[in-house]
Image (tube, rainbow over all chains, first blue to last red; front, side, top):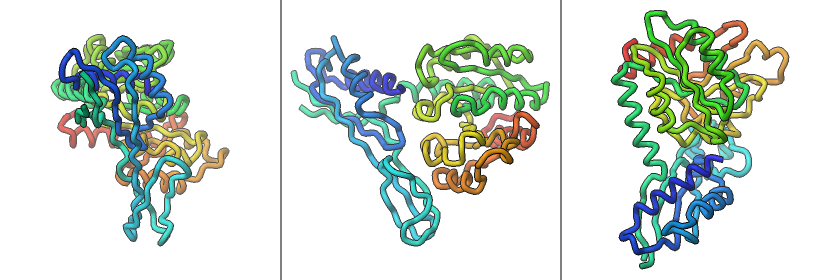
Length: 115
Length: 220
């Protein structure tokens, strides 16, 4: 449900990046870490409504999900955590306990603009 | 034409959160952002903590709820200044709502301000409020696997409260499994076991808040 607020913030940030008032945005690329908890379909649905009557109307919203990493505290073995499946508490190689790192990014990477 | 932006999406909220933080610091307020699922005992915990704060310190609460003023009424009934935010459906508080609530509350320190976030383990994670500390409350009936199922909110906690430990004999909840799950996502936050019903552990939580306030430059 927080996707409504995030979609509005994506739109505001993208419109601020417009080089001039006559140009239009055709595509927006957003990078979200898996722990930012952004659900793509939900975000797109809100965005498609909010962008109406703005310079980003009809723009394609691309969401790039970055994984978090599980790093073993004993042997440093690193595995990706993509948000699906059970978060592994223990290392698959040595059985040591893992710690979770990264996956918190949430930023507007770029916009495609046409004049 | 591709225009590189690379700007935080929530930068407007983050900037307001920084202004809130400066405002809180200038007012000598230690601000606790209390987050949990619905029914974990956020309001009961806040009321227990308020009871144990020395009376010479100021106390205040910002109550966030989708609807109703049930929680704010409980706080007001014990004579503590409180402001209710009703989000009308939104699932989290943001820094702008807190700024407006502070205009209503007019609280100055030295003392403690508790912000009870909307009951939700997902949405409040992304929205900073300007808090001094993030307090995440879990409770025994929710099960010991919550830190694995909702890693993001536990990862950003400065303190984790496990409430309703008086129910441990009745419920299949493994304290070691809970602790191991927390440590996978958060290596540092203390886990304090409490019961709002019996009062067990409340003194430990109050002591932690007091020590933390000194470490944060809010001397109370």
